Amino acid sequence: MLAYILSYLFTPSGRFRRVDYHLVVWSVTFFIFALVMGVFGYLMQKGLGALIAPSSLMKEAEGGSSEMSIGTDVKVVMIGGLILYIMSYVAVIMATIKRFHDFGMTGWYTLLLYFPLPLFMLLALFRFMDWPIAEMVLSAIWLVAILWYTIKLMFFKGIKADNFYGPDPYIETPPYTGQALMIIGIMFLVAVGACFASVASIKQFADELQKQKAQAEEKAKPALTPEQRAAQQAEAAKQAEADRKLADQQMLARANAGDAVAQYDIASRYFTGSNGVPLDFTKAGAWLQKSAEQDHAPAQYNLGLLYYEGKGYTVDNARAYFWATRASFRGHIPQGNDYRVQAGQLLTPEVRAQIEKAAHEWKPVVKAPPAAPVIAAPPQPATPAPAASPQPVTP
Image (cartoon, rainbow, N blue to C red; front, side, top):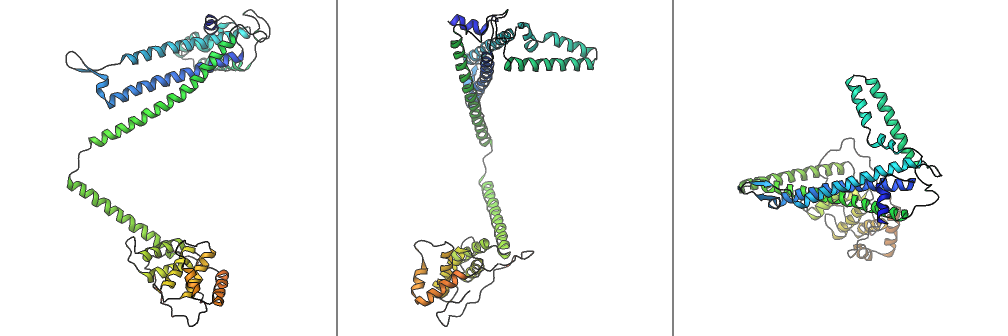
């Protein structure tokens, strides 16, 4: 059986069907690609090893000088790869010859596809004689012929009858052909898997090589003196401060232009005394008011909190309950710190009902932003007078 399979793949006698031809050609194509990529990846790995540990590929000569050595394993891989490449190439040539036999054509047509030496000699002669037209015509004829025969070999059916080159392979399958095709199919799957493995291996080696190169460059850098390190830190701190100021200016510009989110962010800084801004509930309330009027729920909730706790404003439970209720309508109900319940308990049921109705019917104030936003300090709101009655005052 093995002898028949070898003769089936590596001898020119007989005929090949389309399926046989496709399996052999594509299997060999993927196999050669995987072989080339694998050898390349292996050599790359050995080269990477030389970079990581140069002594692994260096040997001391008797005279004391160092010379690069190619390991025996590398030679074996290169020789084995060359042998497999030659065998694969021969298999493709034999398959092409048998495919031509299937059409009743001589296998010498294979020379047109793989060994067009007479054609090259003619093209060289035309180039030497400076006959560009003849060179172009001959090249075009050759390309058309290659394209035509490639399409015919891959997609056209052969003669469904016995011919000079062998019996009809479409009626009776020769012995052990199934085993041969199974071997070819396994070879095809292995070749495809080897392609993916080789590409992944090469990528891994390239990444590791880049990493080692970066580490080597980092080690090669001269050590900084304490003065240089302090200067770098000072420069970084200066750049960070400049970036922060620019971001603050841009945020303030958006807030002055009517951006509710930017207004709330500025208010949050005054509310907590963060990002280089002093704690100031009055300014926080002014910016919260602007954002809350545009129906920004977190701003509404925190504005009500200022009224409830009397920070920046006089304590006003009606206003606190109004803004907290409006924020709850917008889905903003913080857990564990809902002052709305406590503020509502300090109001009568009638007042609570009126405030809830007013909060439900309240419409946000929509302001058109100015043509050119001006960066200015936030306005300070006047502290409202205490409400004379428990009736809610619409802000």
